[in-house]
Amino acid sequence: MKKIIWEVQSLSLLPVLRYCKKCGRKNLFTCSRQFRINSQRRYLDIWLIYKCSDCNSTWKAAVYSRISPQALKLELLDGFYKNDNELVEKYAMDSQFLQANGVEVSLPKYSVIGDCFSLNEAVQLEIKNKYSLSVKVSSIVRNKLLLSEKEYLQLITSGKMKSIPNQNLKKCKLKKGVTLVFDNELQMS
Ligand SMILES: [Zn+2]
Image (tube, helix red, strand yellow):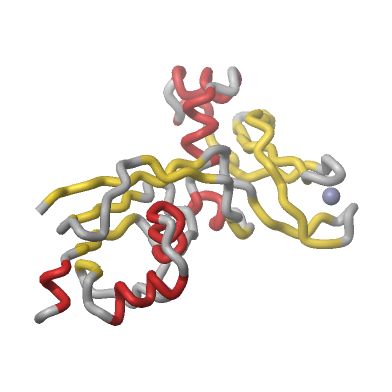
């Protein structure tokens, strides 16, 4: 059986959804790629700064609160001061970090990298979702293989497409990833 891997790649940092006081409604906030560091007495506070997409109001995601500078490696501290890109992405692509800061993580623009295939082939397809973007398996498969909703449902009801382990492919979200098997032989069994 042919093995194919698709990877869901985010085309931007994760946008977050939160209530904006100035706008008076829930709005998208985007990452500014800047950290802010405050030192108070012997402690540091480090935040990653987000801006409301409509009014530029700022929101701060707490990275470290009241931490002793000695507790951080010099390189790391330097990275925060320099707004190091890798360090920004480490936090700004981490849904759990953002959720722990009390915001909803919204879906960024994304693309799915990997080879297409014909439904006449027997294929084991692994879909990877490194950043746990909240997307449905059905929309990824349908968009990539150009299937109508009816054609997609047909794959499920005929048994030609299955997931390992078995999930509800009409509804389920991708989470960290999924493995699908496309096989005409499955229809018989
Ligand atoms: Zn606003």
